[in-house]
Image 1 (cartoon, one colour):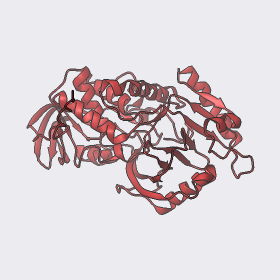
Image 2: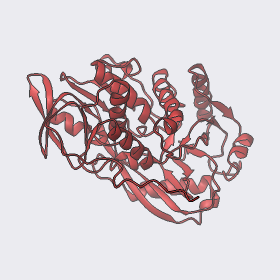
Image 3: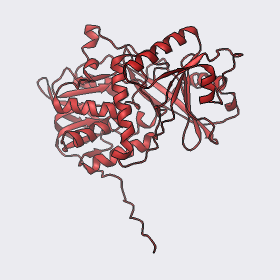
Image 4: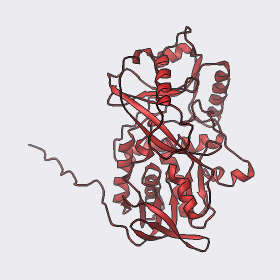
Length: 405
């Protein structure tokens, strides 16, 4: 007997006109905005929510990253929130009922100098104390984990060992966004695309809504999850954020047979490389030094990361670059995010993730949703408040986790 396939829906989610008021408005339709709305609706019972996106859902950094997921950060505060995120990642495919190709293939952070070795061993010890899976592996073990990596001692920067997190991996970033958008829509959240926020509605020192290109929208509470444009929105609200926006670019190669079994990151030669499910190599490096809001970067950064990749993986010398892209990352002075209330009542801020935003998606979504719903910082978010820039209680993650990504 033939089985009839269910009819495919014309749209995976609604595209509603915005209402004039909501209990909560989230600015930004990327991973963090969608995850925040999802947890507000699913865990806190708040369903009258709008996610406002100036372009299309996941058109910013959510689909402009290199999809790496890991939690092996040095400091207690960082390890706590990224490990929280990783545990949620492990359950999300079933919870969201969507196969977004979450692959726990592990990540190697290479050490090329004695100082690298000291820092890496220290981080492994800190990870173990925080319950994060981490190991120190010598060059022979590195070669077993990733046979195509050049571990010869006859190189400019020999591999002296690496940290290894087996539970780390990658996921298909745009599929994650679609999974979240579908679940948000099912929970009654309005996902409003092409609706740029241009200002804020205030009653004294309280934010009571947003001004958009489609008219004013009132809200009981407003959450900002706008990544590189966070500082622009804060200026419109009347305060400044200690963040700078930079381009961060990456590239993919043509499709290749499966040859690269894990994720490899090197701070010393500054490149990180994985192979996507379809077969393309995914390469990234550091941010461009200049401030910019353009979703593209400089040629020299691409040249540098390709040279570093070929040094580590001579087998890739004949591969062709298929395309490049860039995102706009907002970076705090201590390379850690800002999560919590803003100086204005009713307005909450989630920004400053720099190059670590994608891997934090479920963790910060749950934490930021709790913060908005309760009106005060979640315990995991308490160290990440704006006040740390006046108290000096910084969380300095610059390079502490191999590559600060």
